[in-house]
Image (tube, rainbow, N blue to C red; front, top):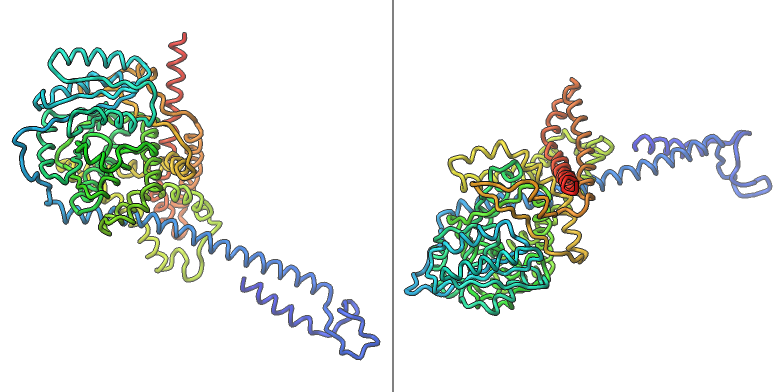
Amino acid sequence: MGGNILGLTRLLVYITIPARQDTLCFADAKNSTIPTPPVVPRHLLRYGYHILTAFYMDTQQYWFNFFWLVAYFLVLIGMSGYGFHRLMMVILYIIHRKDIPQPKGQWEEWPLVTVQLPMFNEKYVVEGLLRKVTAIDYPKDKLEIQILDDSTDDTYDLCLQQVEYYRQQGFDIKCLHRTDRTGFKAGALEAADAVAKGEYLLILDADFRPEPDILKVTMPYFTDPKVALVQTRWGHINRTKNMLTRLQSIFLDGHFALEQTVRNRSGRFFTFNGTAGVWRKCSIFDAGGWEHDTITEDMDLSYRVQMKGWNFVYLNDYVTPAELPEDMDGFKAQQHRWTKGCIQVCQKMLLDIWRSNAPFKAKMEATTHLTCNYSYLALILLCFLVIPICTGMITPTGSWGWHEPKMLLLTFTLFFFATVTVCMFYIAAEMIVRPRRWWMVFVLLIPLLALGVGMAVNNAKAVLEAVFGQKSDFVRTPKFGESKEGSLSMEKRAQGYKAIKSVLVPMLELGFGTFFLAIELFNLAYGFSGQPGHWGGLLNFVLMSPFLGFFYTGLSSLCRVWQGMVLRRRKAA
């Protein structure tokens, strides 16, 4: 750019030189009394044209690079903000780790409790669920069991058989079957609440296996008349089944052991997780009941109830075991529903939360909670912004070059808050959940980050669907009745649950994976090239390795599609 300015200056000097015969006059001044204007040689006009064009193009390129780099760093700063929030969660847990909630009293006579079991085509798990529910240590005359069945397969017949069996054993149990799924899970709960006998409602999804003392532990907290909900921590029956379940368990441990605990103990809002919790029924009615304009009805109701002044209690030390999705398409279906529902609740509730009388810290935490899934859009945007930077097409120069001290400080700070704090968050969670074996999480940190990155396409799609108001069915998480005692065959899996509907998402994931594989190979080649600063290529190779998670999510989904096709062909043959 400086050279073009110098050339332009030379042009301004040249046009003042007297013209020769090979010059072109700007005007015919032969008979004019006006002083002859300067003339410009033809070759200088061409030279000037090229210089002006180059100057214009160079200026355009400069501003294009500038705004591209600004967008790149703004995205990183936004993602770093959510990383900073995770660091604050760790710090707040350390501050409040001893603030364990305690019940205010004990019941002289146990109140009537209704156990609600919403399900849809859950034939593989219904028997195990009812076996555990009927083993709960609570007076039979104070316990009602409702099976909320919206099934369209033979699950309903199985439920009727189980109802008859347990009725003969003295249980107050009934099956409420709906022929339409209006409102999905929220609609089923709304219909059941209208006829529930209990003053308190224990909600359990079909894959949960409650411990016998769950009501004896949770019910004393309701001696405080302001308590609306007691939520227990999720456990993981099949944590060690495969790599995906191990990674999922770490993700969920971070949410349950840190986020939920800190939110509750520090006076911030936290939300019901849809299952493994006990509600005071009148608090649900006070907040307007279950609403089904979002697909995360639990989160929606939680905020409405807390804005009414009710209190929640979270029991981090009490675990209710459950099953994790064991294949990628089931995991994606679950994450898609959670992500989309969170954005729907954000659009519906965020302004109401800020208009409420809730404490400022509760409003800030709710804002972070409800907007955090927008970071998946930022991550997809980052994947595009990083392309010209990784290939060297765009690079900062001058005092803000990559190797300048202030740029190194900026990039290290952003890397720390966007990545290191996330690792600290999950390490702290594993120290809480598994204090004797927490160190094993170090081996899984890179795969954990890779899975988080790989889910960006699936979850960004969910965010966009919520933003543009696209309606979708409530796709429940596949459940197969896995336990320590045994497992179902792959044939039964293929017959039951098909969560993936399109190969578009996995193909996009493979596209991103292919690009980042090429970048990684370039970084690796440069790292071993022996050129000055070649160590930077090796560093980039390590730092960008989580982006290969797109291969993991994409190939895992396509393998499930292939397996299903093969099994259906075998069955047809």
